[in-house]
Amino acid sequence: MANFPSDAQIPEYPMIKNLLFFLVLIVASPAFAQLGGEDEVYLSGEFIEPKFQGGNVLKFHQYVREHFDMSKLEKPGKMVAVFTVGETGVIENLRITEFIGATSAGEFIRVIKSAPKWEPAKKGGKPYALKITLPLVFGKG
Image: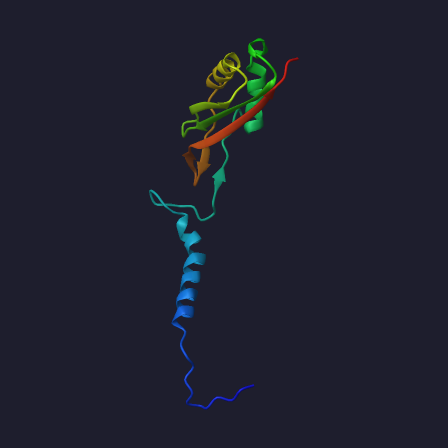
């Protein structure tokens, strides 16, 4: 162990001080990032998924399968719908991003648009619009 004279100066490392300060800011910032908007505080990260007829997205899968007219299916395959469940529970911004054919896609759109309202997602106790991607594989039979 080295012996230092009692009047020895310990060198200052301003770069290390700045680095430590920066690290403290980074660690503390997520706690502050959840504060915001209309005097809301999301400290618990409370988020509730949207519900369809009391269930989750799987319940919506079931609804689409039950109401899809299979005679409009041109061939077996996968279709993907992307939409937003709005703050009022209404489906908005519906897009079909992958489809089998025009007739099948039209039926897929018809079924989704005719679905009953969802119970919207909630964040901090308030309704929250949420984007959903719904892939479905259709087969003849």
